[in-house]
Amino acid sequence: MIYSLRHRTAYGYARTVDLASHLLHLKPRILPGQRVLSARLTCLPAPDHHTETHDHFGNAATRLFLVAPHTAFEVTAESLVEVDFPEAPPAARSLPWERIAAAGLGAETADFLLPTLFVPLIPEATAYAAVSFPPGRPVLEGLLDLNRRIRQEFTFQAGVTSITTPIAEVLRMRRGVCQDFSQLMLAGLRGLGLPARYVSGYVRTRPPPGQARRRGADQSHAWVSAWIGDEWVQLDPTNGLVVRDEHVVLAWGRDFSDISPVRGVLLGGGAHRLEVNVDLEPATERVA
Image 1 (cartoon, helix red, strand yellow):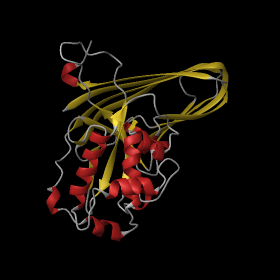
Image 2: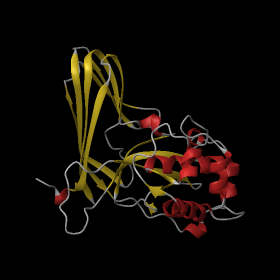
Image 3: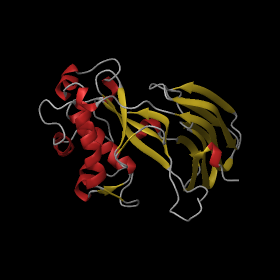
């Protein structure tokens, strides 16, 4: 499947920004199963200095520096991406989960086992995940079960949480959004000693039957990539899916803070307003 992606982020500031430095994670990763056919960024005002690089996790990262005073900042990312991730291996043939946990820190997994500010290792999350991992269970069977349980036992509801809502509170409310469910899953898996990383990107959405698709109605999405001993498997607990051909991977890290799409340091500006619009659609179904 080839997707056309457009992600626009616009800030308006109450006072003039005299200097600004921004770090962007807005270009999709090149991966087995994901081919980036084109990718470009448009910024207003145009940056005085701009660098394309890769961060610690191998994600494409763009650094911008603006020295001219401005009261608004806008960045639009446009990409054409072909996605066809391989099927997950047979779950019953995967290693017992204890074997994965016993392996401990490794070159590929160390960053994704340790606690972070947004994914602390709390007993409540570990106990919740442990239900899916009885002794000797194949690791992928446990992962699929945990993915299913979060989908069935939690309600997607925007506005009841924020980036700072603790995982323990999400567990108590049984409500939240994709970021909450992904970070809950990460905390539970890491608490059991199973490496898992936070993935940001996009998921294809469809309009209700009989209704036209709305421009700009899509949003960024988050899910989990878990290590099963010899490869990573992507799981979307918000939708109870194994990632195949309806997701586009933007970046991955330990938690949301590693790969925020747009973050910056400003001199001036004061209060600000933010507007984000995302469109992800099959290239053959592009809306004029």
